[in-house]
Amino acid sequence: MAPTKVQNGLVIGLDYKLKLDDGEVVDESEPGDPLYYLHGADNIIPGLEKALTGMNLNESKTVKVKPEDGYGEYDEEAVEEVERSIFPDDVELEPGLMLTLEDDEGEMMDAIVTEVNGDMVTLDFNHPLAGETLFFEVKIVEIREATAEEREHGHPHVADGHEH
Ligand code: ZN
Image (cartoon, rainbow, N blue to C red; front, top):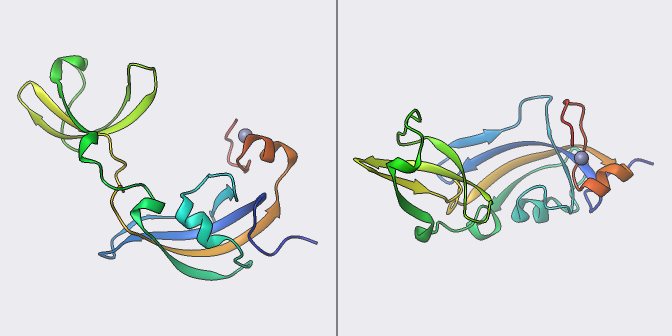
């Protein structure tokens, strides 16, 4: 019998809408195109995963996720001023530009340009939703067993052409 309750090791299909506390919708799934994730494998933020545990197929609810269970608190230390000259000349640097940078250890890090002031550029390495309390309106639209390969990879394989 197919599973009907959300628990670890199952692939979950989720319709969702993400709002901030001012009501702004910042993300949502398209109708008929749910988000698939492997429950218990850290595919989604911890506060949401915890709240979905035990939900039934076709059940809906609104989940409130505090920053520490979401994208983290906003960290003032994660804002850095760097020299314009570290970027190639042909990069059009302006506030709002998202960049992926490599640090000294070769780790890739996402940043947003928040200010360009003469020869200096301010980069914010916080997640864009850091410090935000998140409100998810969710509906469980699919629950199925994960395949052995999905469990091994720690994420679902859906028919969208992605290779892993
Ligand atoms: Zn995979």
